[in-house]
Length: 126
Image (tube, rainbow, N blue to C red):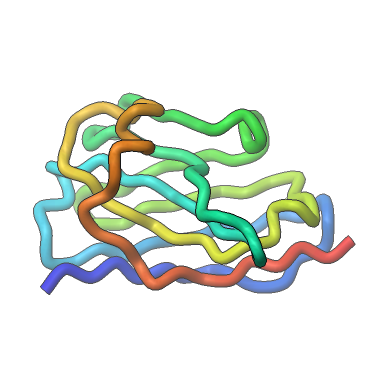
């Protein structure tokens, strides 16, 4: 059974930082591009960032560039999202997702993911 389990969410003040983690099991982690998505209350889910299967390529949406950093630890099947300079508009449920592939690109993010986590809530207070 494939499982993607997010952790590290919570309540943070604006300007603060948070690290999200995703622990993956049941699939060959090295074969998958990994991504973070988020869904704010009342809004559609949107892609945030992706990382290639070897960690050598990354993609970020404009709204998080320079503030968020995606990384992965292949031997331990972990995905991370370091979030700095957080804003109230970053408040959302964050999901990790996996898609079989090589490189992190915008097309990869928008093409539909193979597996999803259940999500974790991140709340940024102003």
